[in-house]
Image (cartoon, rainbow, N blue to C red):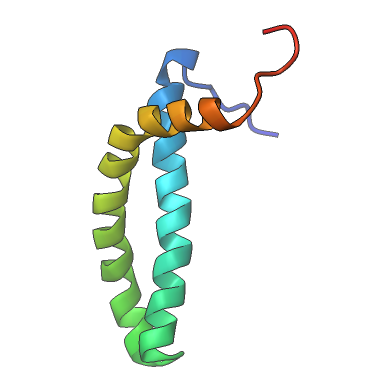
Length: 83
């Protein structure tokens, strides 16, 4: 097994929205592109651009709204015992 060097914990607030935005925009753009074009050769040509554009919007948006989302969730969900 290959040992992978991990990033320091201080990078978690950037890495989490980065990975989340990649995965979510990939799924959503695949679904919407397939829905509009169908499983055609045009899909393979169109999807990467659709994904890239959606990711360029999603990543900075997540960075900006994540603090607000955390506050909203804290208002809606009880804190774990002992906190």
